[in-house]
Image 1 (spheres, rainbow, N blue to C red):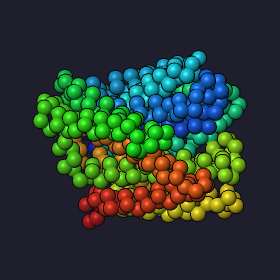
Image 2 (image 1 turned 135 degrees about the vertical axis):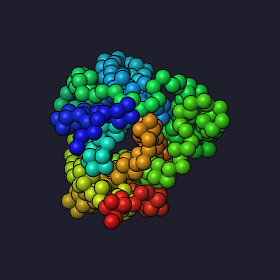
Image 3 (image 1 turned 30 degrees about the vertical axis):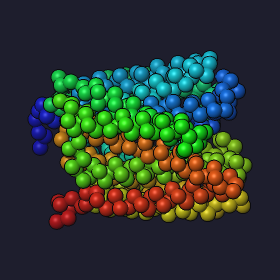
Length: 468
């Protein structure tokens, strides 16, 4: 029986339309996740082309990461306040134009600015994709399937980014790692304008908490800025301490504003009364730290220790991407029966095993003997985690908090990745040799996944209908 549409729930669109909505959301998410890692293998070419110095080159990556992480919470709220369709289209447009400007950049400064604007667009697109999915797929079964596919795309994007960057740079030019987004963005704009409609969440016409938005964005950006600079300046430097201290002070004001000052807070603190929200965000923070570290240090090990070229290093991640995608799809089918908790515990356990296995790599390791097996295990584990964590983090919330919860999960994942990578890079740099530093970082990443099991235990269990 089909229910009538109301102002508080979306109309039931045709099956073909929901399939296209899912495809558009996944393609948009894939595009923004891809750009986190796609530039890595092109950095040496970019440095020669635009005359970057060694310290400045890191900002080709960090400008995107900092803007992405800093604006995610604000971006997540925009869809709730101004409509999912308008927000989604605006984010894609900003990302596409910034990609074009970056590809045309003729100086280091212009490229860094374009990458920062890309990050801003990504921070609007990423939570909007989840808002659209959460308000389109409203039954547990269809939502689990949609989130499962979306989770697979998130994980595969990081793995495919290294391969795509190597191929585009080697066959065409480094500029095509940015130009490739332009036709994709245009197609997404056309399709999204056709199939994504607005849904009344009950928050239209209310005001945006500007002080909350500014303090959250500036505070998070200051923290991430301080963390990503530790490799160059050290943890005890004035540069790092001022950035981290300033970030903490600004975020403390943000908490005060949300609790006492704001009439319509950006992040209503009562969302943290939901145990599933807290558990899901702790899990994705740890998963982000472990997975970002794995991509970074395993890539370095493959290229600098085992002698892989950029394309070969990218190809090495294809089994992981395939395993993650299949696992996410399979986990989506199991979620309605098993609930998020079981899949999170199993996924994190497999992630820890795979990362611990990678920490056994040596200079004599082969792909078949030392890389293939553990990366497949990590892929299976992370596919289950990404599908389940997203479901857990939005389960039981009212529709007008869908964008908020989505933005929070995305922001937490990015922050976990930035913090984990910076901390593990500092640890690795103190090792007796580069290869020993890489495997030490992978071993610590495995420990992070183990610690996250405690948070996963607090996630929602088997649904009552399935338990009966």
